[in-house]
Image (cartoon, rainbow, N blue to C red; front, side):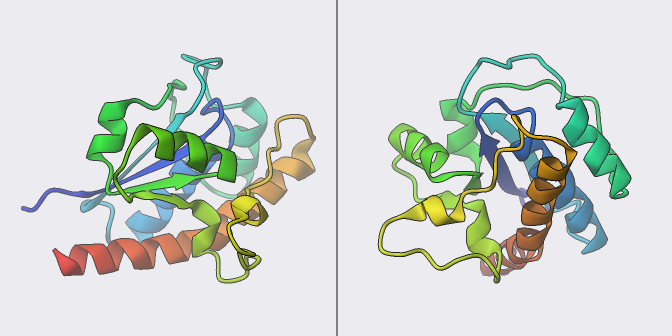
Length: 167
């Protein structure tokens, strides 16, 4: 069996957006029959939340939407992560910049690039593709973030399928 296609999602502390994307993508990939050939994990660009579980509000919103939320611990992205990922999905333009500073591989993309309804990037301003940070908000902010993540999931699956077919 060929090696899996490896996708990493990245946010700031790895307790809200990127683990939400990880959970959604794993579920959707399993539903698409790709769970055995696509691996997904998440990290953060900061170590400030290292070892902490997924934010309780993020977990609640995911569970309410029918997702299984695994026990996990936040961790910071490493050079090894970037070296082993086939696709790195940044939650914001700021995350993408930090990740691109760590690797010269063309694997870093904005998660919302895969959402057909996302705003068009105007020139080089990727900020229009930022996934909202729910951390300082309430449950509605977490639901908005989940909706943004879910909106891009099918596009990520298509990209994974295409990459696997090209191998």
